Image 1 (cartoon, rainbow, N blue to C red):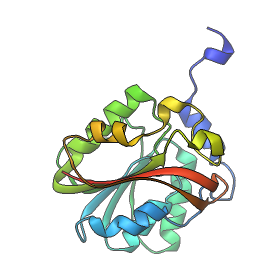
Image 2 (image 1 turned 120 degrees about the horizontal axis):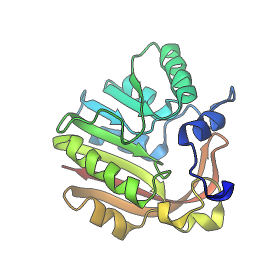
Image 3 (image 1 turned 45 degrees about the vertical axis):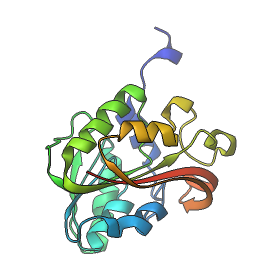
Image 4 (image 1 turned 120 degrees about the vertical axis):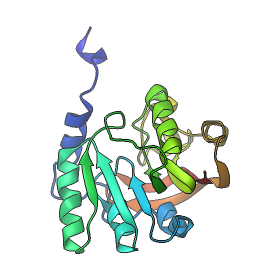
Length: 208
């Protein structure tokens, strides 16, 4: 196996990306999540998948949700804990990847999956299945990602088209849920230096 084809150490990769003092994706919540958070049952328990430096989990905790969150990066979790402490709120953070996180069926009133497009199709299939299983009846998924057109903009997100989302793919992946909103659109986003500029986005809100 050549160095070019060797598997990436995902934890090391993200620890490097999150190593600086600045917040790579900013400290403000994702716009799609902010605009649709009232779809979650009020005061419910919500899981933030691959939460990074905590901008989304802290936002939800500030708005009265009981929040669990996980990420593969210890550097990101340390920043998230500092962000939560600065807001005098509590988030239950866990160092884990999508396979090692302690998924529990029927345990969440909501799941936030914001730009989790590090996942290749195989990992994505496992992740999406676990998200669906983890929702309580009536629980809500809020998801945001990039569409293939994002490869033209290159203002954030993966360079591999297999990691990007289409409406048809999301309808198929979440066929067991009731889709409340599914929208592909373009917008200018400002999420730190990591996501910045004109972007080809897709947002999903779905209920179990």
